[in-house]
Image 1: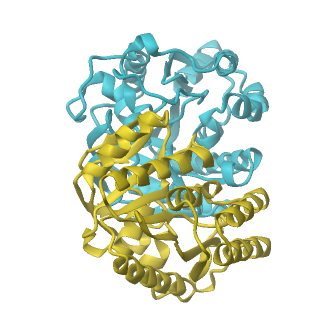
Image 2: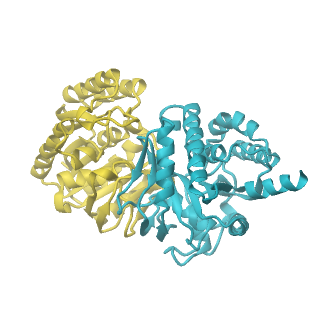
Image 3: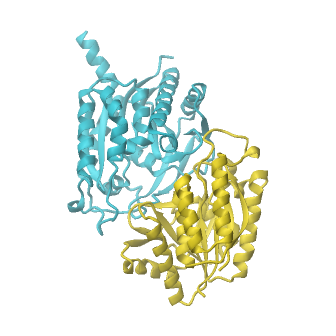
Length: 269
Length: 303
């Protein structure tokens, strides 16, 4: 089996930078469970898709062997800095770039120091892969790709890993409902901004916990129709494309990130 | 102290391709040129700016997008290497800039007093966005004038275009008040493209100008219509058509810089000068100038 574990995790830096804030503690604790489960699955590489790394021309893949430095989020800079320590599986990244041609998508790698890695990727890596020991395969979110192309890209990446005999863990990094508080709030009172979003988030998580890919895809369609969702939930499309199918999931945590919905979910493969 | 004033404003788009085409020493990537008409437009704008002798440049950029309110750079000196996340093959630029923190704080205070959510960015490790850097390089490559950097609040996208414009109008008035109280001569820079329809694949040689043209004829027609209105000084009509322009040309002016600048200048009914127009990966880019001081001198001479 190529994909040995798969997770949905939030990309907001708030639960990482302020783990002492009560509304965000469950998400940080959920991330710790993911770290343990991921390490136990003994992956050779992490296949990462974050809604926060935008591309508009071609499909981009992170090809820098080792990225280090410090990152300051453009919104939440007052809560502190994020340490970057990412290593890429450059062989697999190269295969993914080449493999894109086979599915009709132009692609290229980015291999530059000081590349502005997105907050979501840094936060997830720091939570579950401290020290960057497990190499990464990071794909950008091309804003013009729909769910279908996103699934195809993920499936292609898994196929390439399979050819190299590698075990993959999949990280889908992004939120749920995207409506946030657009004014200052007391972060100790953070909550899901709209009750309807809260209900929709819970329905989707229930569908993931108790369903399979088919039923979850149907639930996702309903979620996207009725909710302003994070990037149309393309990160879940990525996970579905990579895993092919799953048999339910464990919701380790659910909560707000400044009004938006976020969850930590481990899928049963 | 004499009253400060806005001496002029520029639409100053930020495609990093323009820096790449110019090959300045600060940028790591090297090119064979490209996008010359737009770069020459900026050369003319640079001369005008030089004559304006501003004490400060205020730039509003769509690539510092903030969710909660309008933010202002609040660190006296910022430097580093800016790599464009989308065009990292073209733009890897070593920047070093000085911020007029006093004026930034004044703008922040005035905007808050007028009911906007505002914040000062005080983290010295903050990475300035490439839109701000590209606009500033293209208009003043010497980097010898302090700046005020203003974020693009997400309200036009999160709420509606009308609500977004309303906030930018307020931000513009607040900016003007702060400048007037400062005693400084200020130039405003609206860092945005017009029509934003673009190609989705990059040529093997990015500066191959045989591949460059408007991606959308509709977008091009919208840009020409709006530029002509600006050249006539008919900003009332520009703002009446603004939501349609945004919708049909996918215009980046939606992000707020353009209405912020016009509001700050008081929607001057003077002819804008078009320094040049050109496309970058199919998007429409105009370098345009409103010279308020020159217009006032002309009016005074006529009177």
